[in-house]
Image 1 (cartoon, rainbow, N blue to C red):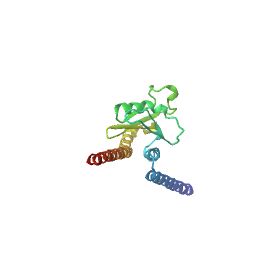
Image 2 (spheres, helix red, strand yellow):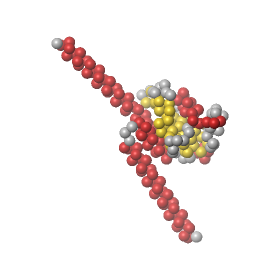
Image 3 (cartoon, helix red, strand yellow):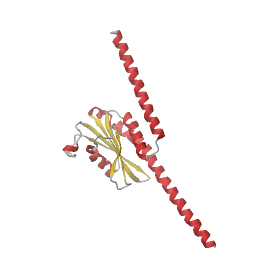
Image 4 (tube, rainbow, N blue to C red):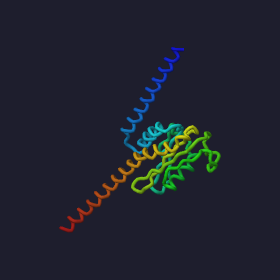
Length: 193
């Protein structure tokens, strides 16, 4: 019996070490990304690691304010069908707020529903009063007691995506102003001659 207790401790310590290594790898990937899809994938892996009971997550991005919004990152496997999360994603986009819904609600087409029961959480990605997309998560039914905590965690985590899009908007604004300034400078030189 003593050996089995020691074996359990060894297993627990190894599991914790593996989880720690996986988390460190996710953060290292997040710190070194250079494109929007890679950023979203790394962010999603970190976020899903923080949420209890999550079995699927996606970041949907599209044409600002108008869409359509499609998946640029899916966790844990890019090939997973996230269509059943469309209803909650659309509601979060329409209402521009975080949404929690049961996966058992009948609004989705039967073919689009998840085979699991549980919860869907969606949160819009907004920066500078512009809607860039939405994040959605599917959580198993055991997560019910943690739903408000999940929504709070997503709310805080979404700030990284909002910062990404704010930086993009500022970079575009600076480039536009530089082009306008160049045109004004050329015009001023032409007028002087």
